[in-house]
Image (cartoon, rainbow, N blue to C red; front, side):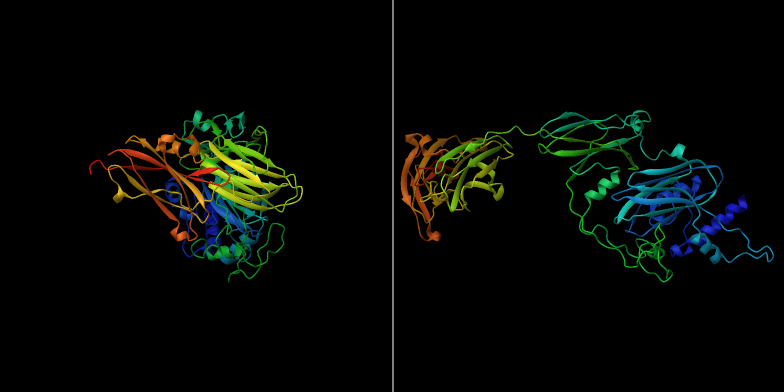
Length: 573
């Protein structure tokens, strides 16, 4: 028996000599060597020998098979081999190689040349023990396996892909992957418009064996996943899924024959499982679309609420238990659920030429409808957002014509169509409630809202401050508009919250006290470079703070407020 194992090791060594320029030691479960070998993971990266008791990660090019070898030293040895496909189905089979006799030709008594023995091992198909085709995590297990050289051959016919392999002769004691509970399903316990609460039973690896684990929750809109490496492959997908490996760095020259590249030592063609030759055209690069997928690791809690989902949308939920610190993982049975549909809102009808006030809750949505009575060539929408940015979408008979964010006053002119109906969707801000005014018309002669410059700030001149006056300036436009100035005394500690409440641009001068009014005047300039006006505000008290507001009023009587400005008079003059 000992002589047979020595011969087995020498046969494997001679078979693998061309794999690299350095001599590779065979993986063994001899504990003195195992710990040293397993720490040097580079020893097994892209090696054709599987280590005993460690998971390896590798890759396949489409339609190009790859072989791995595993040595079982003694008869009646337990054997377990687990293959995890990542983002593509795999075809794989496990076979036991028939090793050549130590001597050939009884009459001569002379051994065969070692090179001839190596070729005999490689060319021999061996006895097939197990085969599988699919994208499930699948395994071969035997409580009593004969000694010998086991060959694992893998093939991907769909696309280039990653995969993982774990092989061991001590499956009972290894426990490489975290265990699942007797009921490994993920359950949905609560379902809302934008939230889903998930719960699952804890892994025995944590609850019974007290080993460190964490749970990772994965959310996407396409399908459930069967392994965590499939999730990670999707998350890192891009236009160039895998860079072509570099000889001598990513794998040895021997592997060129197994990945569709010609090599000096392999003039023939690599064959797939079906026996058909694979053309030596190198690998292809396939374009992969970005995937909307989210992975959240939550520690050892077995309940989690997923938030910020879209209403009336189907999502797929997966939970993976990850063993620490090895990062090996096992998938629970995933689930799927559709979030609740938003309550149907009443659609507000817009009247031609009339301004409508709209209030939207935080993150809320409002729908408006505009159905012109007469035929029209153009339709104009004017939107005045009072506080923060809002989003507007306009559809004509179901076709999207406009989608844009609006801050301040914006006018949109769209091409009309006889008997057309327009649906306007307004979406609020995430920070808080939104208020706006909207006008829709097919016969706009003079704008109901005034035109505004790009910069609606008020500038204060520090050097022109006195104890009783302050001088400010603002920009105008080429259109003649009416400007009204108001001032209000405020505390010295006037803060941002107070200032934000004052910034409602939809509150017009009619809401102000008459005592706060400074003056009103008309102003415009055909030369935008000179469209600047100044005003000195008098009658102020020394060392006091004042809030200055400028309102511009359009032909239809609607006003827009510039950004407020706080000025302080001099205390001593």
